[in-house]
Length: 241
Ligand SMILES: NC(=O)c1ccc[n+]([C@@H]2O[C@H](COP(=O)([O-])OP(=O)(O)OC[C@H]3O[C@@H](n4cnc5c(N)ncnc54)[C@H](OP(=O)(O)O)[C@@H]3O)[C@@H](O)[C@H]2O)c1
Image 1 (cartoon, rainbow, N blue to C red):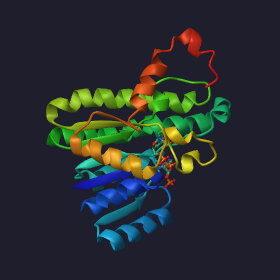
Image 2: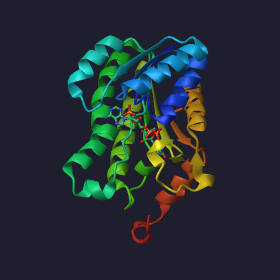
Image 3: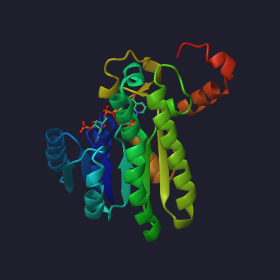
Image 4: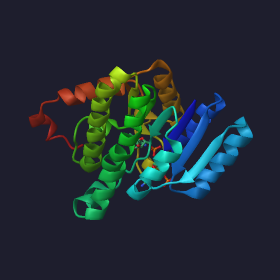
């Protein structure tokens, strides 16, 4: 199969690319940092003799969407991994920071995926995988700008899944909890609740193979978030989260 990965330099995407390449799949890797992409390309070609194409791409560059779509619309699976956590406190007072958080995690993701969704629908075949987050399941004081973008993205993917079901197109929502990556390198994460990029990659690969709709990773986040979502708002608002 041919996979297009947007945000291919993310730590999770790197693990996923290695896993997909090891199974003989072809990869098109898009991300901003060209030298990081080229390192991956060399590594995947050396290790697995893979067919890999890399291309620098900034999801904020809407003017390039048509070109990318035209070049790569024949892929079997689109995986949108790009994410930007940003700083909630800075974002509250900075148009630029909040704009970036919302565009990378939601708005431009939607605009980009829409093109492939229509193409896959017409072809009656294809898989779309989008990375949301458990942060999108319930808004909390520490990261609600990122969380609201991820929540919006999850609702978008849910609606898309509903629309494309009839055409046989699969839409998978990935909802990770904490992952030990460059996104969280300055945070003190609880070890029991924290996953690795390799484990998340295996979970996502499993979700694609089994045709899952929603994949929480680690698995227990589904139940943890269910409990968190059941806490009455009058109590939840008093918790320091
Ligand atoms: N880490 C966690 O704890 C956690 C938890 C829940 C959900 N998630 C989500 O899971 C996904 C993977 O996370 P991660 O921790 O692996 O991320 P990461 O290592 O921080 O990587 C994020 C990647 O997104 C790419 N990106 C950012 N802005 C971009 C833009 N404007 N255009 C194109 N690419 C852009 C970057 O690519 P370049 O390096 O090329 O700039 C970066 O490598 C993300 O969607 C994240 O929000 C992560």
